[in-house]
Length: 530
Ligand code: F6P
Image (cartoon, rainbow, N blue to C red; front, side):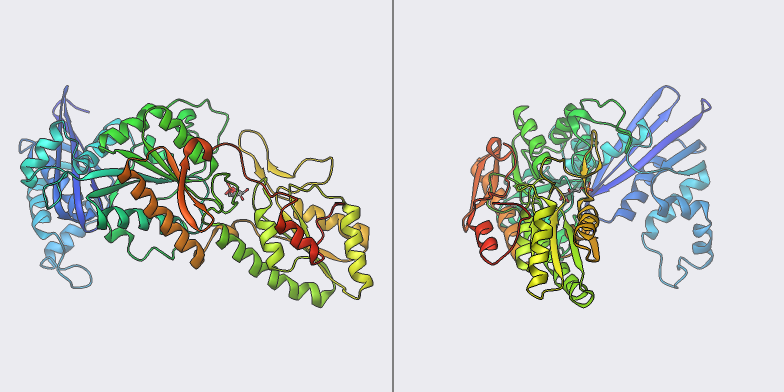
């Protein structure tokens, strides 16, 4: 960089599109540095990106040499790919013949680019380098309306009104929200319920952190307006993104390379919450994410947990949301597999997920009429499975369906893993069972591993309702000051338990339960001698 050159980074952040948004710019010239931060009450992403650049260029003396970095393709390409020239030539009409939006800002940018020597550089978003990170934070803080600091004053001047006040003058309170661990049907339904439950009934805003705890560490967040959660009740996945890595207490920047040493970034996570003025963090997750939530609560961060997992293996709730959807998907698959089993007189093995608990296998196996159900809680013997298949053959039933949980294993052996070590992934027992049974019975056998199909798609109506009840209950707990709790289902009632209880071990199938006994009563084999 030459001494007379200005290096500029710009960024925008928004809380729903269109919605209130903030922008930021960091300007470096020689040894001096300047920061700009502002907010517009109603804006769009694209308008903010232009606004940030306009404000930055305005603050630099005319005739300067400037390199402007932005992650906005809209802004940078307009200059670098000749769009701007074409718009000017076409009387500010775009290629479809429609008037170009934000013409006021484009005009100003054009003038500023003429009176300066500007080089436009496209960068990747959030965190390309230190300047970029700071600029990103500035833009976010502008929305965050931190009660102290320069950005708040700026916002008050720009927006002409106090920070975080509702129409009736009360202070708006903020909760943070993140989805952690594997995705699961119903996550969006919970997000919707938290946002609507908070904004419709109380002066509470919800800040969503992107990609689980990663977003918390890196302060990658956005206010979620009720507008943003419209139409997501039935959508699978999570609009916030998630991650089953990125432990803030052992944070590894290496993506899939787990050999790197982790760093304790919990301080950065706490800082992000402070920056957004968040009073309580709502964590939607399974045992791993709730364990992290619990660790944050020990650091003094108020948290509320919402139990999510298709595995249904959390001890402090009767049911987790996502489980019913996974069971429904697995049951439909077993129904379909029956067709081939019957037509080809085969043994068909269906491997389902569930980690070290057999809930999905037991429920889907029973609902789908599986002849043999193998669960981790009841180690199996191949001889018992073969005996059941032979018994069916003698009865004239020339096919059999085996539903096996990914964590099931043979007596005296270990479960089958796809990956061991720091990150363990179960999987592969289905094909193994299929091969062994073919050898033992002489019957043709095939295996189907359902895998992530069970985590995808629309939540069932049961899960939509449970997720909605959980989300609303979390807001109510916050309102009541009942923090460091996890919402839960007890019988048919929504309740809560201390988070401590919620992270104590996993809930597994009781081999002596009424459910297992019922399955046995209708002839289902568990591949073992009772
Ligand atoms: O916990 C949910 C779950 O789907 C388990 O049933 C399964 O063992 C695991 O996640 C798979 O994780 P990944 O998506 O990382 O392969």
